[in-house]
Image (cartoon, rainbow, N blue to C red; front, side, top):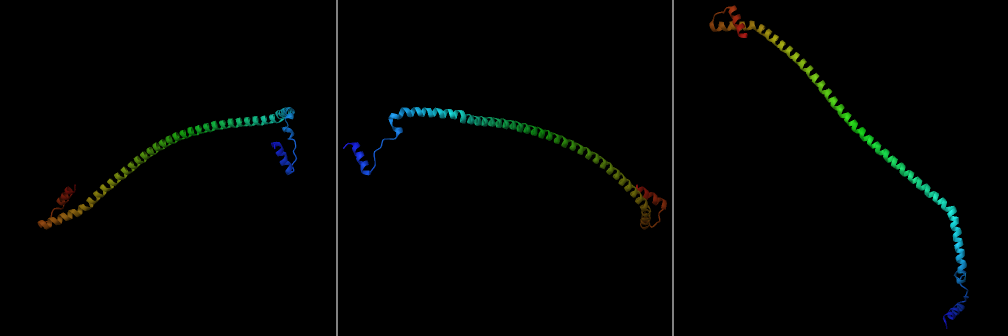
Length: 181
């Protein structure tokens, strides 16, 4: 048997009827199908290019413009931030210079004040030292004056004990005065 009859026989035994292939696969209608395909494609192309495509293009253009504006704004903010940082660094440097100048000035004022206080303290100490020296000399003079009678009496007693003779009071005063000078 040939291949076609076997196929028909197999279909017949199963209970399936043999039908014609689908119309779109029929080679006789290929020309009209191509015509309608082209016409439908052209109509869809015109419809999409006239209605949907302009909307898509406007959305894309809007996005591009927004992106461009955002980039420009970011660049402007970046420049402002850079200027602010430069201004901050300049101000900081100036502040440091002023602070250093104030420190030097304060140190000089402190040194000057310390010198003045030191000089005043030196004067006060010199004055107190002079007063103490004067007071010490006065006390020494007073002690010498107060001790003179005691020294005269002691000298008189010593001479009496050693020599057994009572010395002249004027001579003893003169000797004690010469010894204390």
